[in-house]
Image 1 (cartoon, rainbow, N blue to C red):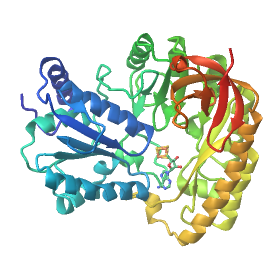
Image 2: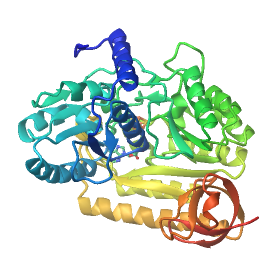
Image 3: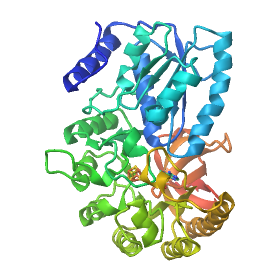
Image 4: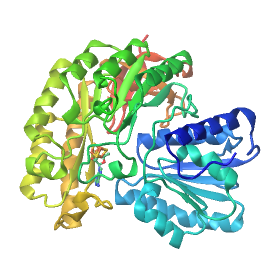
Length: 467
Ligand code: 5AD
Ligand code: SF4
């Protein structure tokens, strides 16, 4: 069965069926090995789970070793320039591997592959990359491999299609915690961000499909799910059904899944109903990642974030007072074009007011075709680095304070693995999403246990099981 390259919604359905039939009937790549490397956010990590599922459905087996493979895939990120650099740095090594093993197929996918200029650049400068597929073309991978004829094939749709349901065709990294996509793309167009261009407009999954997946995960013994989207609070705005994130959360909570999390939240779409639902249901974890990006109203406006410093702080306080034991973390960008010392001071002041439990901090990076990349950026890299260090120092004092505050307390921890720090210990996450290394038997993996916190390190906690 040959499928055309330009696909409308009906053809996409046919394509999904094609993959599904292949999965059941044939293992055309039996005996072949693949290796995949993932860069970037949770969305990419989950896309990789889908890619692995697709590949194994047609007979591939996964290899954890970069050498001696039939297929190597890089699932790339484009959010900041250093994400690009990491990929380009690694391509040299792949070129070398291909020289020694000419039948090796090299694939590149993810957000970087979706960027306009990259496809052209790969065509001209990296001919040894065999297949390139964009974020809207993941489901076509088995077909691309089946039809690969030795010529570079770049398959990057500029337009996103309908949401396709894959009947849980994922090879998940864990059998305890799972990612569940609730939406794809983003309509917010923050001026610095490349995501609306690489992932397309917002498309929400149907409630019934999400609930089906969560129920299947629960029945399979999963203990925790994380609802995934670039802006989860805008869930449903593109659906015909009158339905929002608060409705979705409530329904997901009623499935009885033991722990429910969600990322990422946009302050502008965070409603009182959402706060109410989170505070009402015990299986919705009291942890909210709420990116603020800047404390200066002038910069927030230039970023198109749609809220002010004061509005953010009001929402922050509402969440803190209404949700018991909630932990809030954030994202902050320093050195946005035109950011003055006074603007930066406003960011520091907001951090001092909020005392975030943790934060991811970034230096602004100009991304292709985004409005911010065309704004005047006079600040030296040295000054940007100084600001970042100052901000990190402040943030660290608050995350340490959080750790000290819970020293000696009993925390409920979902144990997920053996500890990376000490093989005689296990590791897991508190309800507030803090990593704990625990003195407890290996049989606790997959269980929620009470842990007494007895030491606080910079990025993790230590504890002992409390019977
Ligand atoms: N430069 C620096 N940081 C960025 N982020 C997104 N785009 C950029 C950019 N161009 C940060 C934001 C976002 C997080 C995922 O990455 O803080 O919340
Ligand atoms: Fe990017 Fe803004 Fe959308 Fe987040 S909300 S993905 S920062 S455009």
